[in-house]
Image (cartoon, rainbow, N blue to C red; front, side, top):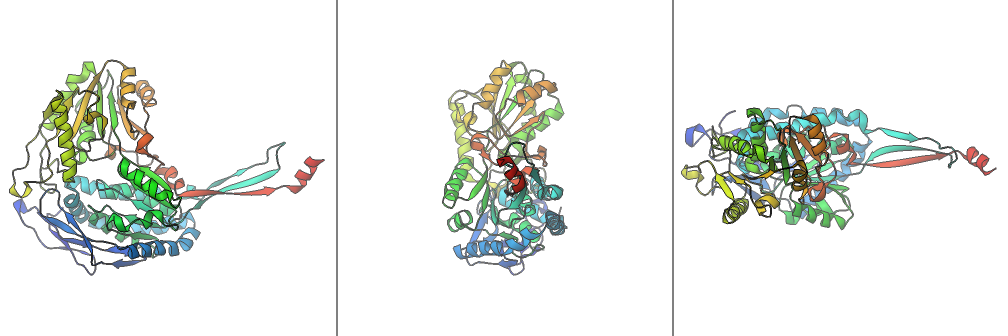
Length: 521
């Protein structure tokens, strides 16, 4: 990958390499401009979203178009106009067009990753994987094409009304997909291709604080699809309500916080718009007495906790470990944290970037201080960056909180930052009860050398997805249905279940009149 500053030509939206600057040939700022993409046409606006660099105070990464209510209405109209022709195609025909649309998406991945790293704060490699996962999910969805239009026949049941019913699947209409800042491109891949393959048209709303890379990727795909099938609008939430409340929107798929999901659901209720909500998590990782704690397993745990500086909904947020293995696990994580390098996401050698928002940094600092004040054993690691450009950035030293009181917020709330409580237990029953004693139900994990133990404990965790001897977003089976329980949301993404979430059923019943008459006699 080149360490180049990227700018964008406002007229065409194409990336231009303008050279390098700053320390070690690594870029310190980027100027990117993205527009809206509505009905097959790029559109720029006078009002823009200014995208800040979370690692470098005062540095602007770029500008994204800020849609007006009229722009949003145009996007809805474009999706509605394109829907009849798109939905009339067979799933195989749609899949062929979608395969053509994704072809070559990797050509600009290095640039996409550099931009996303700067607007999000995470390290370059994570940003690169973010874009890669979108392509993987897209292609896995296309493999489901032969199942999409399937249905079933309900035969006549002796002694009942003599009716044969054909049950078929159908698309639902234009849909809105709203993604969060942390893994916006990858998360989009969990729903967008499934919605399109099901026969719907779509409007994508990237996050207002990290809109640039996502918009670039979506537009490149949309340009290869029929106009209006795929649209992207960026802007302030104040102008976006129609994406949720318009009677022309059939469904909203939202990934974000619990409070954000509640607001989406409340707004969608006005028009009875259906919703899928993938919300926050407070995932428990449960280490049984026979857990394997070699380097490979500890590396997996470390990544599961600290990837993206802890800002992933399905990261491990609470670690429960059998008391006899507590010291071993703490030592293993400590060894890895001692090697953490806090710094700018594009700098070589950086392993942990800043938090995305200053408010989130303040929250995580607060819950760490609360744990200290309560007498918990808090161990902090790493050194804050010394580069003057990074002073005041959202950097935070990662921390382990050893055996905290379970009522502390570091245990009960989703930290969404580089801090993890490690809590001992003495019995399997105690661990399961503690793991389930939470508002969330997104994911969990069981770590054990015994398959039967893994299945026994995993089956008792109240969450939508369970790993065994593993955990984390980069370890997700992208073919499997994914979604939460309890306040982690509802509905499923990925797999054929993810396609069905964007479909309805229609039943057509054929009455056998002669058989009915015979029954009457």
